[in-house]
Length: 411
Image (cartoon, rainbow, N blue to C red; front, side, top):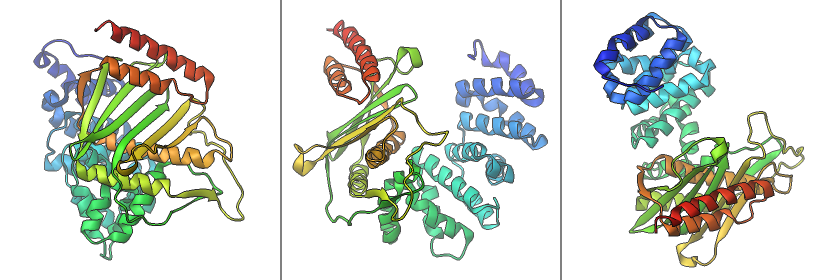
């Protein structure tokens, strides 16, 4: 849905929808608020009145989404509402609602202290629900460039509180993004765990398999180049990172097949700069993951099946990199589709490495430029390498040829 016309003319209708509308009306209003962003600030009072009056899950959910879309600094009442909703038993039973509350609280600049206070008071009741909420809150805060939530969890460490137990479990799962803060505060054991656990926690590992960390490395690797192809749900993202000053320049080619949706125009390239500190920590994470061993648990039963929510055959990941001292020695991990038992470790490593790049990309402040002939030639060459699936390979090759032909007209 798109809003046309003067917002002041449509505001009375939107106010009525927020105050009296059913689920469909609130859904439509939420879509409009998403488009309007901060311009919809006149609705925030009505949103708070509705969520206070109606405890229905769908009302709470749409209310959280609208506050998040506005992206305005939270009032004390709004911050209390988001913290209360995120730690409620309803949110514990509905993880998407807890995640929405965490993202909204992070986007509006809310303090994590209110969440920690509620966690220490026993809300939500389940430890898994509390861990998930704190992880979502830290993850969303880091995406918005705010590390206060991570700092608050680090301050809890060593205390005899429930939040301290949650912090010890959550912080390593943030991976490279928490490493420097943990090392600076003296928690070197958790920092070492973060380098190994990090993205592995979100990677697919079925019963019967285990991850064995490799020997700790004292080297400080520096990325000479880093490429990542990540294909899932019909979209292909290609990342290219190269040294830039003391850090990295990260470029993203975001492409969709015309039959499967729409992404950015093919001639657009997104780019961002990565600081020296982040580039160094990402390199350490890559080296730590590369040194891990994925193996069958001794005496266990091998299981490489996929659960119902796992990705199917339309999936491909390839990550290649080289260190500064050995720029000519390219290392690579890749997988495609559903692996056999022999291929499963390769799939696990490739997905974990791709998630490191994905985490890096989510925290970037992207700019946009027009693609050049050199960009298109590089993407074409990258995409036409063997992917392991002939039909998929041919589909993308044909698509990129069209991109290249369109780019040729710019000369």
